[in-house]
Amino acid sequence: MLPKSFEQYKFNEFVNKAVVDLGFDNPTKIQERVFSPVLKGKNIVAKSQTGSGKSHSFLLPIFSKLDVTKKKTQSIILAPTRELSRQLYDMALHIASFSEEDIKITLCIGGQDLNRDIERVSNAPHIIIGTPTRVLELDKSSALAIKEVESLVIDECDMMIDLGFMEDVDKISKRAAENCQFLVFSATIPTQMNHFLKKYLKNAQYIEVDNAKFGKIEYILIPEKSSSRLEKLHEITTVINPYLALIFANKKTEVEEVSSYLISKGLNVGVLHGDLTPRERKQMQRRINNLDFTYVVASDLMSRGIDIEGVSHVINFNIPNDLDFFIHRAGRTGRAGLSGDCITIYNNKDEEKLQDLEKRGIEFNHQDIRNGEFVEAKDRNKRQSRKKVVADHNLTEKLKSKVKVSKKVKPGYKKKYKYKMDKLKQKERRKFAKRSNKANRGK
Image (cartoon, rainbow, N blue to C red):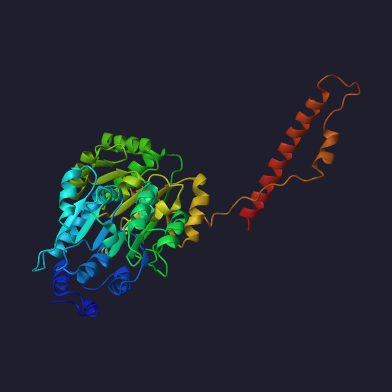
């Protein structure tokens, strides 16, 4: 039976059957805000994390709007990677399976025979799902007429930018009709995206679901201290008991280093980085979905190209320079109503990044590991900071009498005098610092 919360959208009957089969009780936040505008034909820009129910927020209304009697392509859905395209294709096939009438959906991605794709697209499927470069190739071959398409979905738009596909996306958008409905979804809205949005999405409705304050994610900070970062990481793995843990490293070399180290410690580890061939990525995706691994070590871009379900823990081996990636990483856990932990190893050099993340609304729980378990640690923000010792401007005058000055001026005299003076200043500053710290402890 269709949940009452979905009745208001008046989806096509076969779409409602798909909703029931999917087991949706209530629309997610992003679905609540996207369903109606899509059904009304409005342009939208939606900022929401992967795993928020975003894919079904546009798939369900697109299917409900389909006119199956028309033998033409009515919607194109673009995704930045082959893996994400396949996942969207599988979701679309599931929805279409509840229709009594035949709905044609075609997957068009690189690595497939182009001539075969041309043949399939020439038969005018109702929906095309694919990567930008392949879709553009099909339009250039005259097999596809983008100008006749009624809606164009650009999924993971910020990732399109990261992977260098925006030029192809721009060319596709330019070929679309003036009244084509644009649906843009992105986890973040980088400045590079603004020009594209102004160019093609006039009068767009902007929708944002708060990504920073994940209520079901606990953000844990673990200090590196005297251990090496690898040793601290292994220590963390001895404490947690994950269903599936994603470990993020900033560089491909670090991904390899971390995975090799953990494997040497006897852990079951999968790897995702940019040097994997498409075939290896597909195999790794299948093995991850089959839960062959407890831990998966990944680089940021590779992990974003694959939707991984059931992640109970995210571990940051280091903090990314682009803090948007931190948000992407954390968003891998705490999905589908489940809780998750985002654990970050840090040292003093990370302080500026941590403060920036706190400004974004993230609240860190400071912990450390003792006797094989997490224990509460002192909040780094509450630690008594040492007062910076400022040299007394009269210090030089006070110390002059302590430095013997020879009446005969010899070569190198100034250097020797300065050296002795600096040594005395340093000694005085240390004394002052000791007195200050002693006084502070007595407070």
